[in-house]
Image (cartoon, rainbow, N blue to C red; front, side, top):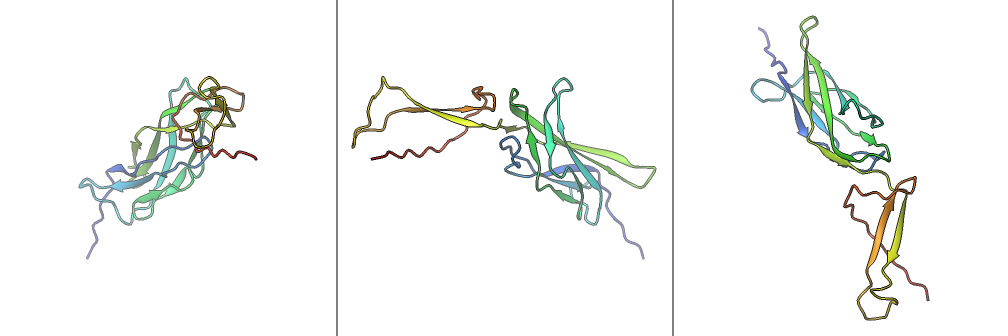
Length: 176
């Protein structure tokens, strides 16, 4: 008696990563599977899968943080703590992660690669400024509509972050 095992033919993205803010863990962590030629996950397979940022060689400063090398469990690797650091002067639009594995017996190993869908990582805002257009309404009056405020996100060097439409929740407390 013998047992036939499927061989991994490709890597597949089981869960696509979703972005976050620089140095914070991705909001959705990626999961990668080893899949056979029939599209089925290869159970019992134990292979190392590495993650790295796919970058233009002329761009530097992006750093992938967290555990970037995992061993598959039943053909699946679930990353849990990946975060990307982006330089404050660059935006994190269209970032892509590449995942690589080497499968097969020694001497006959082949490399498998899959890329994630592009996602966004926002620069870290170190401060928010709040301003009100005084020409619209100079005073707050009870029972009347609230005046318009602008919130601006600034990086550590005081530059305005223009790369996002990040929702910001603002609570305004008025003293007596």
